Image 1: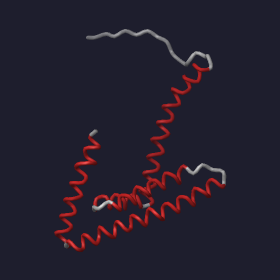
Image 2: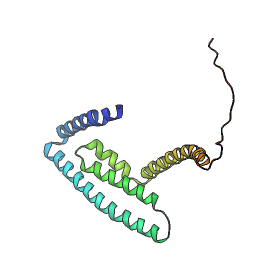
Image 3: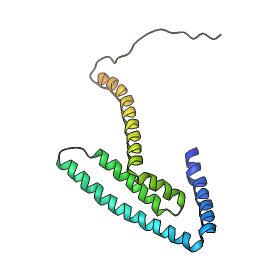
Image 4: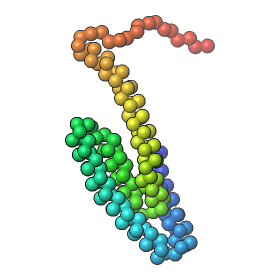
Length: 150
């Protein structure tokens, strides 16, 4: 719940504060031009990323491989394009960080580790379910315990 509070209330306020600060430093017209240019760059990134991702996915599928990494990269590039389209310099900075190949690779590796951890946790429970459906006894270690409050 706190993350939504930050995203929907504090992030726009921070963007507005940065816009006012930049506008007072470089002028209103230059600030508006920068916002328009970043929006146009976002549209361009989304178009190019879509075509490039589709091309890489098609190549991997033609080789008989699953294009999971290409799909995730395409999603990250789409997020970066969307952040560039949003008016504001903080979102543009985040988008530029996503567009850098080494930071995008770090994000993909972190996401992949998290998915693998979650899959291994679910696999432990899935094995017990499969054994129950097959009529076998699940791997349960029985024991006794008692609670001692001091």
